[in-house]
Length: 259
Ligand code: GLP
Image 1 (tube, helix red, strand yellow):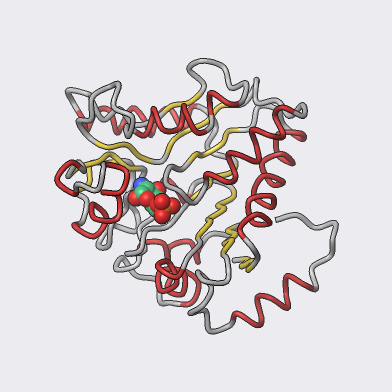
Image 2: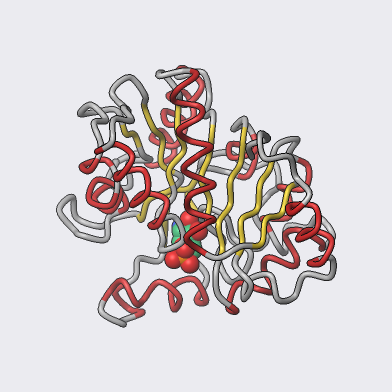
């Protein structure tokens, strides 16, 4: 696992560099998209690069998760969030972004179909991730099976409180259920790039990088991934025991070597 501690703008550039590098070597790259505030600067950076000529026209993308039951036109439905924050700002073709269908009549069947779609696409090349304060990735809450696949989950009170800011501050308006890629689904992506900023994420980041692998901190499964990158600002890195080592390693990294 590579840990980079740097200002947020640099982290966004690094993540965008990794996406751009993939797209330049393979225009049919399959991206994994995350919602939340953490990836927004990456989407801004990619939208800027698109204006400068970077094309997504032959790529496709899969989303991590979706709330169950939010109306199709609800602004916080993750499909709409991704459309607004990213897809509409680049040249991804219509239908190139897929997500779990939180409005399906048969939710388990929708989850199985979603897994099949990812497999049919050849898997995700680069998965962008954020992390919840309780250590969740996508919506894999504490206690999630480390071998889980896309399924229905119940959100914790903590996550609903964290996300209430997107629902006018009202925790009661945050859905109680979601569909989420499982931890094993996420682990199937060929490169994981997780972004975190702010002190509220410091304990989750410490557990992710340095804690024992445990369903109590679901992101710790990333320690088993052969190509995982953790991009954090100073505040999110403030509880890392080996922060000096990560800083030194990054400072000594050859300039030609990407993430
Ligand atoms: C939600 C999303 C996660 C995201 C997390 C953190 O719970 N399902 O994918 O990582 O929020 O969000 P933020 O980046 O806004 O802190």
